[in-house]
Length: 194
Length: 342
Image (tube, rainbow over all chains, first blue to last red; front, side, top):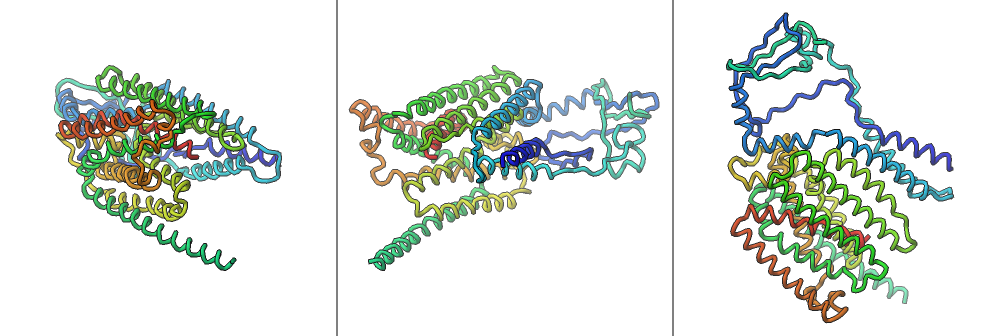
């Protein structure tokens, strides 16, 4: 009975440590929320540049100022709050990890102390079983389908081919503010930067 | 004789059924009407409910806590000292944090760390209270699991401090429902089944409310500081993809249930007709001095409610901000008294 409980507890611990995995799946497209976003309309140009080493998004200063003005007041504060909710600093991560470890340590000590030498299913074992079920249910949310092709995983001039259209594309882009000009330019290198 | 006893039991059961049914119908009817009205005009009803009921419900809660507080703490001394000390410390820290945040004295990092620290203290305080309560139960049960749960939640509080604060906004109204359940168990056990039926219907009502409002446009908040604050309080800043109409309606609906429980149901099931007589309060029976203090506190409470109404009339937005900051005291005070009922 005791060895069975140990195996059960270990399995529950492993299951609860699992988190929903999103294996290389493109992020869902955001629904536009025109009423809440600071938006401006501006012309944009996509420019394949054989000399470029990396993808660059050039935003004219004038356009940038307009965007900032649009974010002024309540929307700016709202955006700041949203960012605050999602960003995780190093100290926060460390503290979260510390408390998570302590939680497991305290939970383990309690579990060992609460164990009774009986053949009946104890409340502790029932608690572990519930955790296992919850963990298992959470772990089942796995998106392990194939990811987009390599062409759609970096911003190069190759994205302008029909092959990338079904997936959309994503990749790193260097955002720069430039003086002069009145439209945003996306400069695309011939191949992904090293 | 047995037949007579059987008949009496049957009669009592029938009477119980008759009493519980109007209670369930009234509860469900109130929830349904509240959901419909709030779904229709959430912003206006948010303003109106806070104006009318925020102060009085605090007064009733205070009166209830006075009733639940024993005249002599005895072996519960450590529990009550931890409880009251925690309420005082955490409320002071919260008000200070709010004041510093409002004056932009804290930068974003300092604010995030401070709120995470506050949440951590709150969770550890709650775990300590649960643990102490376990030691007072018959058989001195080991409730040290509370620390494991609290530490797990602390990890969440550090990973997403703002989400933790939002959770408190939405979970606090539900605490009143738990209070009512524990109180019914003590004083009106015959209503409990009907009450559980009402509780089971609550998620359904919320789901209907969400289905109805999921695609409604955001509330018109541009240029209206009060509307913007109400939406932010309901989590609009953290959930930009969700309609503020839905968020505000959900929050107001839960708050309305909270007010309803404290203003109507709790006095009915716990305080009774002589609810406002100070001599019914255990603390007041301990001596003339304490009796005077209890009476003075109740009178002060009535004046506080009147002052709050006056404040709302003069400057609703500022008073609402101040109220929701200071109201943290009653949110915290609920915890030890609920734990005592476990």
